[in-house]
Length: 265
Ligand code: FPP
Image 1 (cartoon, rainbow, N blue to C red):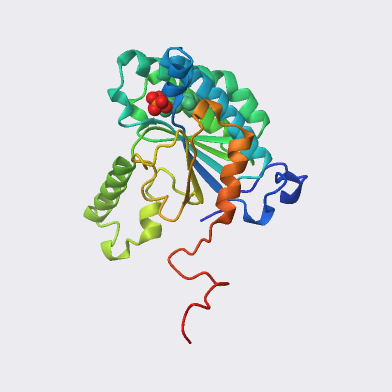
Image 2: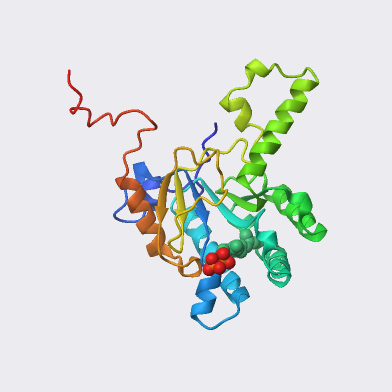
């Protein structure tokens, strides 16, 4: 699968990398479960929706940092298939917020060469939001910068079921030999088709769950959980996540090539 290229082509990765981090060991793709907006608001005696508003600012900050630090792709969990069960007012607020943010930020995304995509079952979203999503996706589709994927009405299990259904339909029509279905063929039917898998999953607010997020794609991701509530996520928190990532030995089920002396000859 293609590796997205960082923007700022005038600079090398070394210039972009924050001090203390190894530019050769930066993740290509970061996935984030942005958790804790409600608790952030509650702690300040504010309504939950203020937490979501502050969450947008944290997201803009994080996208800019990832872009500046040469990360190729950022995928965030904005609204899950389960989030419809929240109170109607909160759901309506979130849908209106997505619309407003998309409208307001489209020009900046374009200027910064961000390529935005929305991943999920988009047909269930309000029509106006669907139109804005289609416009933003098309407008930024040829941009050379960071791939910014916003998972909206997204559920990992639903994504897998939809992929299986597409393959079964092709097989039933005689267009696909079932024996040819392998991991690459399957991955090509996911919402994330053509994106590299995330190297690093960050979850804020101390929760230690995957919550139906990118179930296939996170197979070999390193997981970083931090106590920071999403609206407070900043450069320090991102740097800490990256430093933690760089301490990991990624073996993908194999052995650490520089530390195999514990095996008897
Ligand atoms: C989780 O916190 C956060 C969400 C369900 C919404 C996240 C959405 C944004 C940050 C806005 C993104 C906007 C765009 C345009 C992409 P929570 O409400 O579950 O917090 P809690 O666990 O403390 O209750």
